[in-house]
Length: 87
Image 1 (cartoon, rainbow, N blue to C red):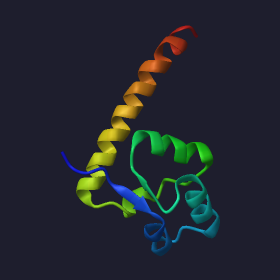
Image 2 (image 1 turned 90 degrees about the vertical axis):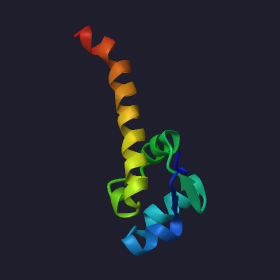
Image 3 (image 1 turned 45 degrees about the horizontal axis):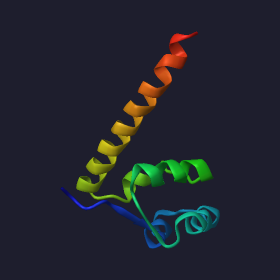
């Protein structure tokens, strides 16, 4: 099993993250964060832009991200299915 990818503030800077996003990243995670489902959800919740993620990760790390993302979406769809069935 591969190591969990890590995103750092130093990775954001050269990829054009604006100062507000850099500050929000630091306020939320400090200088770095493991790319986990929990941290991904936390990033979205606090308003971090995550659309640039693919530019930061190696191919193996991106594959790990996609695996975690797909599992999270499956859990989300499973959780909302009963509510949607009522409408």
